[in-house]
Amino acid sequence: MYTAKLAHLTQLISMPGGSEMLVILLVVLVLFGGRKIPELARGLGRGVKEFKDAKDGAAGNTDQRGETE
Image (cartoon, rainbow, N blue to C red):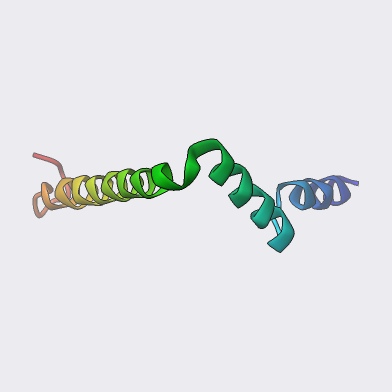
C-alpha cells in the first residue's frame, strides 16, 4: 500500500514532457517578452557563477585538519 502511494506521488512530481515544456516556454515568452528573457538568463548565469565561486572559496578555507579558519 505504501509503495503504491509512493509510485503515485512520483508520477505527480515527474518531469514535464515535450508538450508541457512547450506550453511552459510559451507562457514565459508571453509573460516576460522576447527582450527580457536574455536578461533573465544572464542574471541567472551570474547568480550560479557567484554561488560556485563562493562554494569553491569556502572549500578552500579549510586547513589540513578539515576545520574552517
